[in-house]
Image (cartoon, rainbow, N blue to C red; front, side):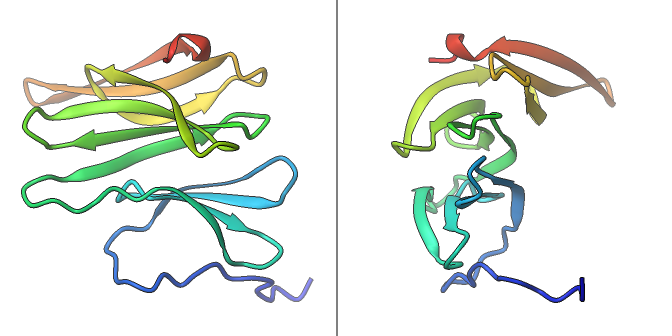
Length: 152
């Protein structure tokens, strides 16, 4: 009611130029899922405000840029979809499904175009992906529907 801050998460102990690109609560409200532009995915323990677990924190490598474009948490809070871009030897856009309970990947799919928006259907069976393709000085967008069971 007073607009006062109830809890803070962090700060992280190292400097980072990346900020949160996605925040979402698990359905039970126990964890706050944070996905940063660097690709780091952290589960924050809401009651304590401390880091509960880090799902991934990609290493910094010379000449390689890894960027998280967007993310989405499925309705039951069991999966996080994260769209990333890596400028490794072969530039690659991909969507990775993370199993929140185990902290492991549940599937990965390569993308032909860059993914800039995602949303799960209410039943969690579909993942809507907003792609962008550049050509001739114009950005063209399309939305694809992917069955989550087919991302392996």
